[in-house]
Length: 314
Image (tube, rainbow, N blue to C red; front, side, top):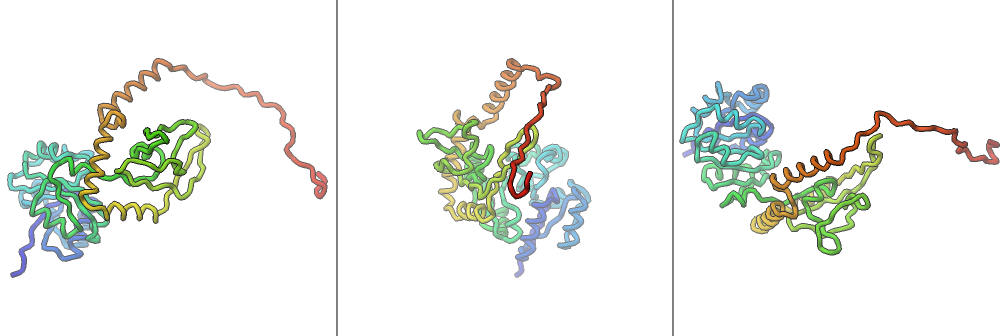
């Protein structure tokens, strides 16, 4: 007998929703979708493209669908969820960046809440690896149509990841490059960036991409700004390297990075960064010296820079 399609309600008709629906429709997976009326113009586009239904309201969607995929913009998501009445039958999957499972459970009064991370664009072509926490057979089956799925046993596993980034600006700090003494490399006016690859050793969680070329840009207040540019081929190789890592090794690298990021040395926790801001704001106030309202610059006549040449006679 043909499999009866399951109906999934999608809260948030943004770019990610479009990628997910595209991937499911591409392989004719046994799912139907009902869209929320939020972002109505985009929802209407999806409706016309894939012959979908738009719910009368967000609440109407929840009342009709047991499986609910939430991909709302993170900024206002919790306030939107708090105004809805979820049912205990709702099985929720959230792909909202930066919103914890605990926060969603609190706003929805549901315990059947799962979180996922997915690349989006690659899912449209059924090639995107996804993370799922906690384990769930219904959402595992759904995500499997969009690419490989890694189910996490703990939230710590879900939160770890390798860092792929250009060796430029603040991204270098997250990679923990080491100097000759094995210490965390500290940048200074004499050595403002490791973008030329002077130091190669870094944290095991990092996959650095060094610039293929460095342009010199600037402005009047800041005359010299390095514009680091990486090649698309180097980025693709870094992505492929992480993609091919066995799950255990990827998790181990991510956990190593998480431990370092939350350490005293890194100072990347909310508490440490807040204390750093307070410290430097206080220092700025204590050492503040007003700048003059204007500068007087004396301009003298300058000698000619022309070079006489026998051909021109100048």
